[in-house]
Image 1 (cartoon, helix red, strand yellow):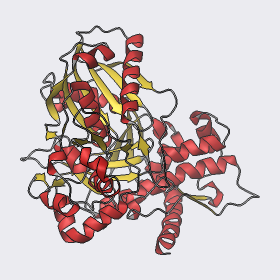
Image 2 (cartoon, one colour; image 1 turned 60 degrees about the horizontal axis):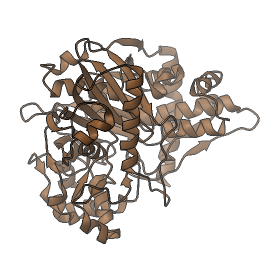
Image 3 (tube, one colour; image 1 turned 180 degrees about the vertical axis):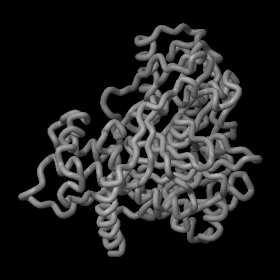
Image 4 (cartoon, helix red, strand yellow; image 1 turned 90 degrees about the vertical axis):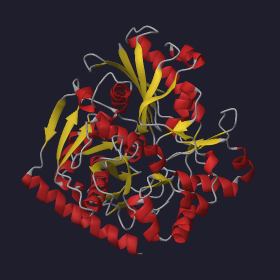
Length: 494
């Protein structure tokens, strides 16, 4: 029997088929072959058609069937991981009313700031643990202000994973973890924040029914089953945002454990057993997947928008060489890229910069020294410095981040990137043979009861490599990082 996991990213939809008995992944697939586009009708906007996610999910599942044969009755359960903080609006017929406003869209920052001013920082941070910022609640407020006729037609709002679950089951629902990532959740009352809804003048009845993160959330309809080549009635038993799910995928469930990823965005996500917040809301606290009323398990997340998208941009201007070739070329430049500094903030408002839109910067370019290798290396190092900047904020909140787990994927395929991160942040990195889709499949096994405890779901996961900080390189990287942070402070003060 198999477990089926989907990871709904902004670049592609990934699918994984896991042998439930062995915990081994037997097939993976992704669709489309090239990155899905983000539409930007105006500067700072980012939208995607949610119907496109479904189409790519169906195609990815078709590819799974071509890689590994499995019958209609062979799937035990389905788990879903998804890009966080997006807004999908559907009408009474469960049809999307507009393109989804996705995670890196910055248009709603003024709405979030207005709500923060009305709520007061003390209330917002002590109850919501975050500023409303440009999260889902603020995006919904933007729709109400700017598209009131469309807002009136909204039956339910959903996060991207909620939408996919609805396409599978026909049932619009969400989770506590999802509501917390949308900044709808009051951590003090452990319920939807009525105060936030009042201040932002949002309708409570537009929020979907709450279901547990693990457990039967609905069953696949005959129509969806036919599209996916599985049986009707297969339960959807798990959903989580991509970063809580990435942490689960890496068995990061307890305080002191941390996970990282560097795909389109870059994230470090650490588990905390305290209700904690950053006074400037530069990092964010959400409900982790294994949170309960008895055991507080919150995930503290720092997010860098301009990660893989910077690497993708560098690839485009480098003549379309492969990422592996880029990594090889970058390694030919010395540590610090002979003084070239990159600030990778060119993909919308950055939370670690208090929602400022700084824009990407390449500083101290010397035409007589710097070659393609320097530019590629400085790009990777700039991403590492920005991630470390976020880690420093998390450490100031009392989190211990000494060992970080990552999947061997995306930018962690680069030895240069791994070493730079380990030495700059002063952490040990362990690489594992997993990804978000595999993690969602494992979690589906927990949700359906096949695994009695989450720890049982990780029998097939292995440590592929351990990267330790190198004392001599650590001194070099940290000296350059100090220059980088000093220059950043001056820019932010302008």
